[in-house]
Image (cartoon, rainbow, N blue to C red; front, side, top):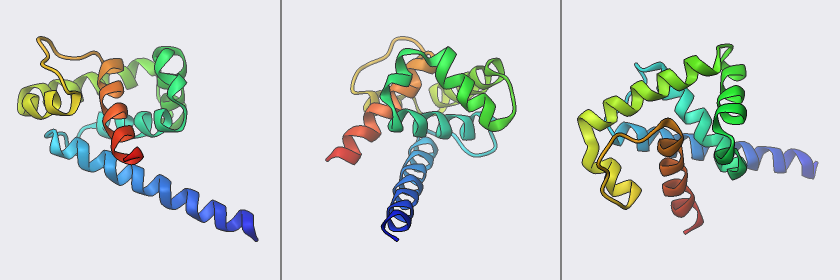
Length: 126
């Protein structure tokens, strides 16, 4: 019985994180019409579960996201790059605010995921 309660709480926490990530992406001007929207949500969720994934983004993180969505890691990276380009064009100031520093160039997908992760980790830990 206690395992079931734990499972429900874990799902509730997971859902809360997903909503937080969705809200954050939408505040950056990124909507669900982009395939990279779902890929980014899942990538950040996985990173919140295990931050070690940030050290092996291409091998570990993109691979897990690709497997979940039945696609390739190249497709995941490309679609996250598209999401970043939209964010950079539409709401660069908000991205810099979330990152906590001025950016002179568009972040890489790994940097973007790291920025979102750090922002949400600080928010969740507070």
